[in-house]
Image 1 (cartoon, one colour):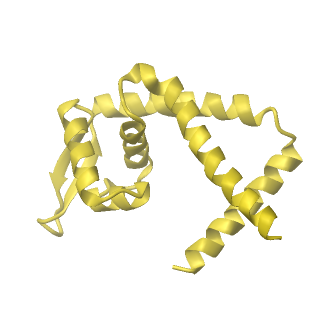
Image 2 (cartoon, helix red, strand yellow):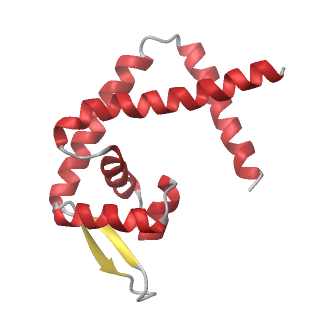
Image 3 (cartoon, one colour):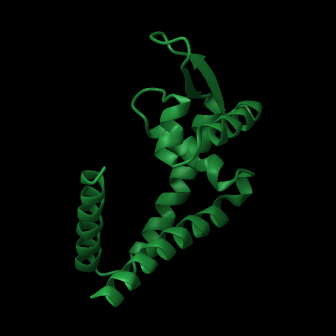
Length: 144
């Protein structure tokens, strides 16, 4: 079983990396790094403007790394920083209209990429793999 578990862990890691890299190649024409478009996407999908620390946590990066990324996105006119009304130390990140348009492009490109790749899989296989990954995610969350 150990060999199968190692193969699974390696396949999971390599597939996630390959997925991000393939999507990044499709988004390269936007002039943003993978970290940039992922930051835009997480901010766009948030119900409320996220704080810098929430963005860092969701993307799995250090706070200082996120601050530098947000600085670049602010300079590019894609996001703004706003003070939180409940904690003056907290800065919230909000997409600008230009950032929203960029997200719409990222979202449409990602949807097309998903359809193209996942459309090649049998629905039953996709359903089974999805349930497995969701269960694994829940197990990981339960250990924290």
